[in-house]
Length: 365
Image (cartoon, rainbow, N blue to C red; front, side, top):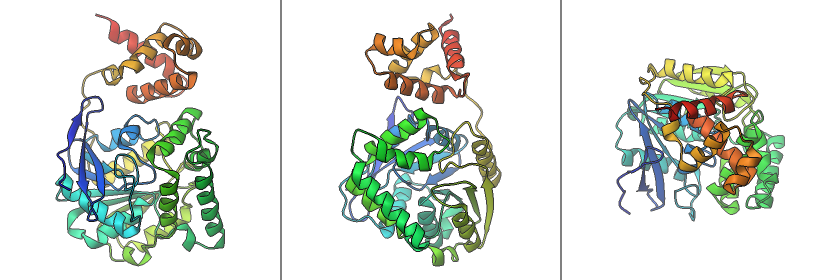
């Protein structure tokens, strides 16, 4: 299959393209921002379109694309990449990364591995040291759960059973187990987004295969061959990957520095201090500064439906009344508002009032 030229999505302002892995699996990748390139290795349950609208991932994309060109992709079996795939394995994941890098046309770049993506990043760094300027690993590990003792093996089996039991069920109970592990400090809206992201990203059968393959990852020996300067960052209270696994990963890499953050979230959220600390550590390590802010209120980024909802918020209506006016569910209204807050970069208890004020200001001549 020939690779396609990335196309601009006019609403989200990123480019989406497709390339082929060595076994002909179609991989979707996206590019946005400007500056020195960062390639983010695919991680658990991504969807290029849903991630852009997500209060769980959008701040990551904004920060990584501010002063950098960010290249990210959906792993095989997920998101906009081919869903029906034969090979789900560590070797296939590394080959997928190589294919995306070649399709994106970058020569030298910083490589970011998050969670299981850290192991893939380590393997790439060992094989292609000449391509990397920096290596950044967040929430990563060198060995999967099945290699960490009997207790972790039992947990692996329990989580696989939970995926099998309720992944595609409209009731998010079983998926919510993962949301509580990944985002223990998340709001109900953030957890709701993550629940739905998982269901939209892949099937139950593929999710089981992906999780099983992650449990068997092992780059302990490969890590010793990495010569790229590396930043290892880990949340001290991470419930998905214990902090000891982050410490082990840092000790295995010859040129690594370890930074621990005060958080229990596996995916750092925009309004926690650990997120700002992570961005500061990342920029200091890469030696880059944010791009000059562009003029605008952020209102121009909102979709027509988000504008409809925000207009009624500015008029002083409750979510229940807005839902009735627009023939939506209250939960859908809440999600539109959460998405709006992300785009306007407002949060906390004052987020609703700040967003309404921003809308009213934009309506003035």
